[in-house]
Image 1 (cartoon, protein in one colour):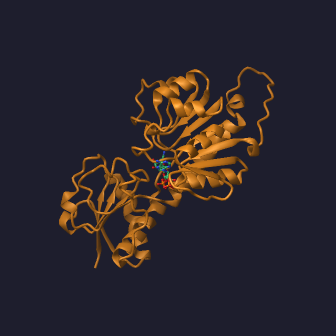
Image 2 (cartoon, rainbow, N blue to C red):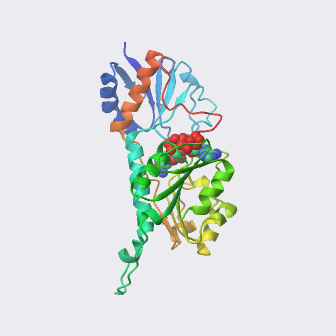
Image 3 (spheres, helix red, strand yellow):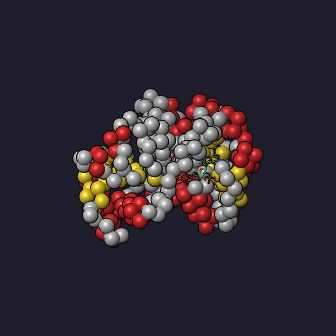
Length: 310
Ligand SMILES: NC(=O)c1ccc[n+]([C@@H]2O[C@H](COP(=O)([O-])OP(=O)(O)OC[C@H]3O[C@@H](n4cnc5c(N)ncnc54)[C@H](OP(=O)(O)O)[C@@H]3O)[C@@H](O)[C@H]2O)c1
């Protein structure tokens, strides 16, 4: 019997996934009937990356699970018609992409690369950066992505601390949790990386008070979510030079409006939500494994905790 899999995605996403997901299902001993137009009452699994947040999922009440293509879930779990279990995407391609983006931007700021790359004044201006071992980096969020980034930064010899909701142990990383833990990480972070999900508890986690705790001249990287930052407080800290640079990949409103001050600010780098993408070649295997688990009556991977909100 073929497993009926309905794509609730853009048509181009269906096109990208059709061949790799069929192959990945075959690898786990299943045959899939993949479509965008199944009779909703017959659908067993949803592959989910909606083009808008208000998709009515009530016709798919017989589906065993919805399998998301995105790591972030805040816009998805707020849909009241999403009554079936929801598994988000944890994908090695997504993780590798994020590690590369974070490492690249940490190194840019650590080495002060802009001074040379942007130089046109002909000045032989030597600036020797400290070694990574003497650079303190903080990572807020030590989940799939934050922990992978923290480990890579440790491998490069950075002095890394991280913060999560529950206590953690990651070799080489000074791990903190809870409100007092946040202060401890902020106090020491010359470069701060935000890899938290957006939940009511993390909304504006970087605000005037928390920004004031950072060492003078700190740099902020935000590939997490725009809503983690109070934009006005960040702009004030940048204007004052207390924060010397913010490299932002995520924003409260996306695309970032053309008249937003972030575009023009000399101390801001905007990247257009490209820190990391789900890759069909690797993500299809994650979807197939979860369908296999569903069919075998085994617990699904990466189920979202709707109370915690991530
Ligand atoms: N820009 C991009 O291209 C892009 C791509 C993918 C993902 N993202 C963003 O990256 C985020 C993180 O992804 P992920 O896969 O690493 O998520 P994850 O595995 O769910 O990890 C989330 C981390 O945040 C911590 N956390 C959550 N709420 C907290 C709180 N109130 N206080 C302290 N720590 C808290 C969690 O703590 P515990 O460990 O204690 O649970 C966990 O360590 C996503 O939610 C998404 O917003 C961005």
